[in-house]
Image 1: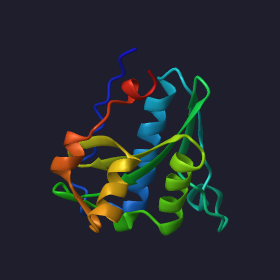
Image 2: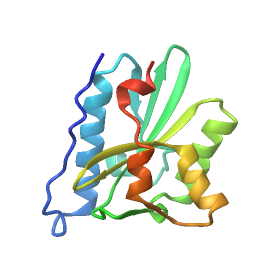
Image 3: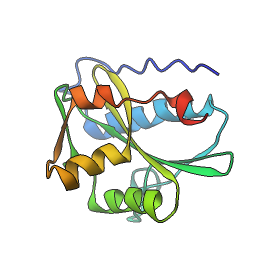
Image 4: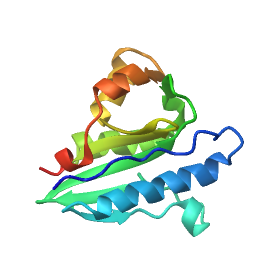
Length: 152
């Protein structure tokens, strides 16, 4: 099944509230997930519940018995993504899901040019092996995954 992944966000985002922009991106990603063949849920977080509880990530999807964890982030940057946008708690949970839980973890990045999905291993390579807190969008584009290919 082919899924349209044209998820551009408005170009003029400098004046927009990043909190509202993040929720808008989560809603766009949820709409895409709903078009796939997987079971998926939005994991409630303090933005939606108002409580101070932390969520391990934004979305959990299950396909043929395998779990997929997605963290959705918005950035106005078009040259690089700052890994400081991931909290330590999110980073640890994405890592645990991949290595201890046997699932697959992904970072979904929205910017004014579109949506990118990268395997969490790319994040790990930059943060741990290369010691960098920034991933150039050139590398993000080179490692970009299509959502419909993840569930095959």
